[in-house]
Length: 208
Image 1 (cartoon, one colour):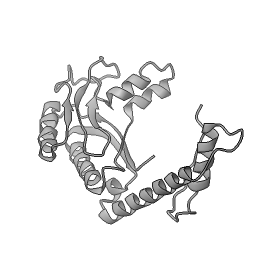
Image 2 (tube, rainbow, N blue to C red):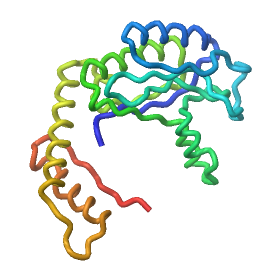
Image 3 (tube, one colour):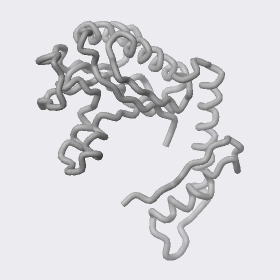
C-alpha cells in the first residue's frame, strides 16, 4: 500500500506524439530523471480497438517513485508493458480492459515529486490526451491545494507506520495461514476513524 495516482486515457489523434515525447524528455532531463522512449510515431492516427505488439510514447522514473508511463498501444490507449504482459491473454473481456488502467505509487517519492507529476499530467492532458481520467489519492489533482496534499501524505505515513509496528509486534496464531494473518492485522489496525484518527476506512478483501 502507499499513496498513489491512478489514470487512464487515449492519445488525441489531432496531437503529435513526437512533440509530446520531445517536450516531456526535455522536462525530465532538467530533473535528471531516468526515462525511456519507445516509438515516437503511431503507424496511423485512425485509431481502432485493434493494436499491434509495439509500444509508443515514453516513461520516466522520478527518485523514490514507481515508473510513470506515458505509453500507448497503436490504438491510442494508454498502457504499460507490464500491464499488457499481465492482461493481454485473459479470456475475460473485463479483465483485459485492466491493461488500460495505470497506477503509480508516489508515497516514497515525497510531496515535491508528487506535485510535479500531477502538474505534468495537467499539461499533457490539455495538449495531448482525450478521455483522460485520474484519481489522485493525494487529492492534489482534484483540489490543486498543497495543504490538502501535505495532509494526505501525513495520513498515509501514519497508517504505514502503524501497520509496520503492528506486524513487528504481532505473531501468527496457531492454525492461522499467512493470508489470514495479514488480513487480521489489516482489519484490526486499519479501521478508521480509529487507532490513528486518520479518517480512513480501508476494506480488506481476500483475493482468490
